[in-house]
Length: 413
Image (cartoon, rainbow, N blue to C red; front, side, top):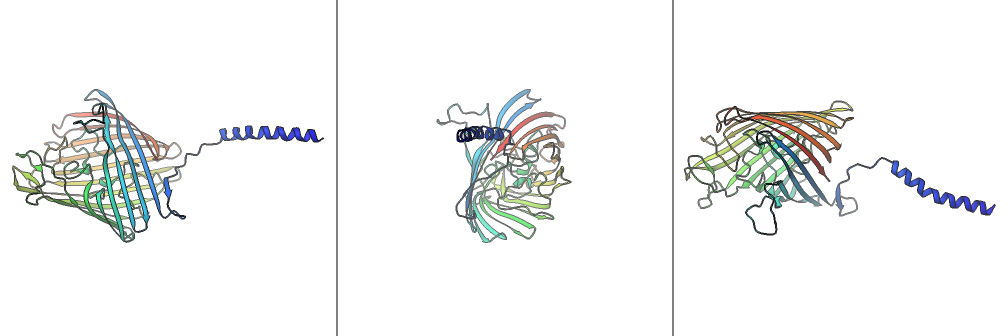
């Protein structure tokens, strides 16, 4: 009898691991997102948070008759809440790495620096009055003039920034990009906070010393010798009618995928006195931009959510039409942008449409761009695949058009 019991026990012990292993194989994998965060105290109020992401593109351009692969973004961001009164953030990475700008040996000095990492953000912040009034300084992203000018690249509803396709208003939310800033970031001082459902952010920034060739076309120039064009000023203000959005970091969410009910209306500005030099350093023009926008993102029912944004931009480069800078055409005039997406939760699919139209002085005809896209959410914004087709007419001729298809894989942790 004892031998029988012993034999049964041994058999049970032998089969338990096998049975458990089989159950684990059949179990649904845990895809839930857990932040990469290190707690510095027992309750987790002091912590360091790490975020890393890659966006990879396959792009077909009908005009160039090309098929190109690129790393659209590769980034790493870390911030630490070492006290309720202090925050520090560092963000670095690269953009637009492709076969045309790869550096054969990054260890050697080269004229081509496109494959190198660079600093995007580096700032420290002090809570003077927690939630209501915070002051920070450094290389920052607390921008005017609109929601899209402050948007996060982690959770965009569309494949990329509006205007990243074909028209003459490429990257129009950052109308001065690469002129007075370091790729949409300024070096300066900012203040931000929330008073109930009202949110504000304002900044005073030391403009980049951008010396270019003078001529009939104005040049964005800072003249340190006479202290002209040294500073610019920006702000964005919005009101949340339903759920309140977080303003811990400057990056606005593109879509909450039905997890929040958000309706916000905002307005912003950028003012750069004596920024432009026309023909000589003493003949100066000021730059003034402003924008209005409205954002709605909410669930319709348990299965469907909608995301919509409309924005109007007005750019003024003094009495000039604008100027050419690094392939961009900052120009006086206006841009209207709209985007709409519908999420089907059970299918994990979100089709969307985008449209913008621009009436700019620098180009004789109106530019238009239309986009049609589809998001497939493997795990929300943490892992998704996006396909997008854009077609647009360029204002330089009013007739020239281009068609671009992009496929993006996006993962962030």
